[in-house]
Length: 354
Image 1 (cartoon, rainbow, N blue to C red):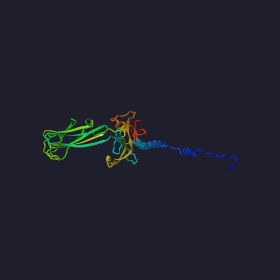
Image 2 (image 1 turned 180 degrees about the vertical axis):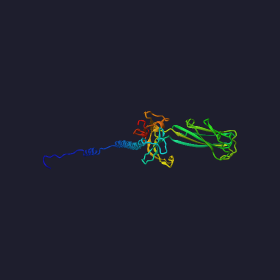
Image 3 (image 1 turned 30 degrees about the vertical axis):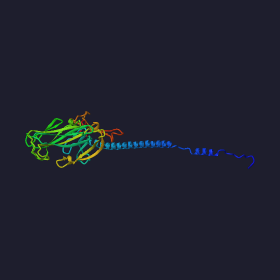
Image 4 (image 1 turned 60 degrees about the vertical axis):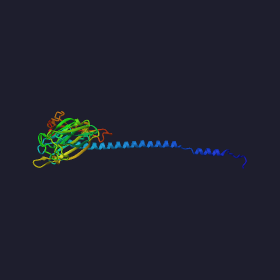
């Protein structure tokens, strides 16, 4: 050992080693690890939800833009055709029909020297529709029978009707069947027209409007025969006096999610003398996302030469100027909001200021 150097002695080296090891082994506890993982998962979930929402919004926006573009092209073409409207090749007046949601006119739309019958219209959005059928039988002279329908619509009823037909001992003018809905008489079957006796088929189908009776989502139909209707028929049921068959139909009010389809129909002139056969009409879709009917907004409005708005009774005779308005929305329950597309044109051959 060199002179001048004093050896360093470490006391209690075991404690020193333990302290050193503890210092380097310090880390997260189990609870801290779980909390960190939870925060990470929440952050990832929030980010994912935001990305999905943004993607969906962007997707609907793209669909809306495409729908608007399609509708705009259709309206531009329609306005050109209306502007050039003329008398039909069969001598028909320039305008055939002018309602809030349908406009029919004549125009040479393809420049082939023949005038086409052109129809622009929206297929009504309408609400849900449904139908139910049932029948009842009476086994006594002058008897009656009933059927009922309940809980048939889910939202709000717009209209309802029933078609009733009968079979039985009904071959005489005093052998009839009265039809009732919730106690209110709707009419009489086999009264104006004699039905057969035990014919084995339902006769005299008659339709009645029953919206008010069905408004509470429950309706009772009753058929009551006159006293001369006797029980000796065997169609479906032995010894019956009559059978009544009910076909009940209803339509619900359109919801905000309902959409109408804007269409164009073209009918070419045929034959000699020239005719426009509507069964030969070619129909094309312009837009499937029209909200006018649900919003209560007309597609077409009509004006005379002095720019006065015309009612339905004056449109065919006095219309010279037409405005078009389409409300477009791919999904009313999501953004973006309604887009309103408007245009107008004057029919050149009906101008009053020449």
